[in-house]
Length: 166
Image (cartoon, rainbow, N blue to C red; front, top):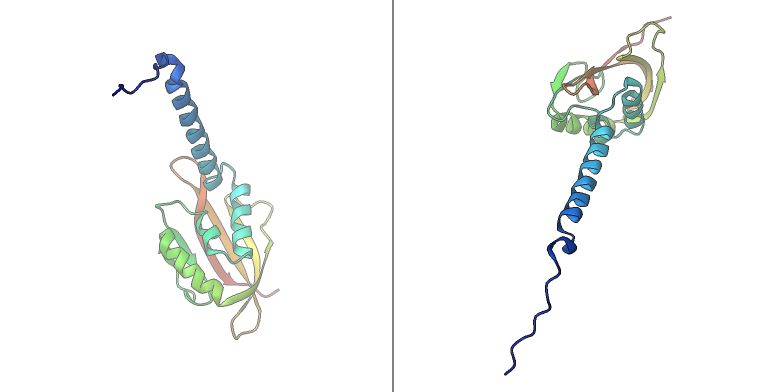
């Protein structure tokens, strides 16, 4: 019986070991950096844009993506489920609360009415929405950002208050 024939091994450098490994690691690092940049932003304008898009779409996932992953955000909304009580929440709890909130609310509209001299990390919106079984209402929504330990902007608080009479 003949012995199995083995092909000769290519020289060590020709196998592509180290260069291939470096290429794979570089790709992984670039993908991780792009993901981190998408989650945290260096400008408040970008983060406010992400928040506005998520709120208008009534997407709890998009709004909580603006939060610091292990941080908290204070929410005070006049409609169910918070009914005017301020609560500090972690992302998982905020997501569940916002899902319940957005199920009860329709026709969401935000209009930026921030004064020209307001701080760059605070926006005031005229907020019009229709809670289930109620008439549409217009209130003020104050959204505040803060910088995390990496100096990226994250959501700090969302506070709804009655709109002052003109």
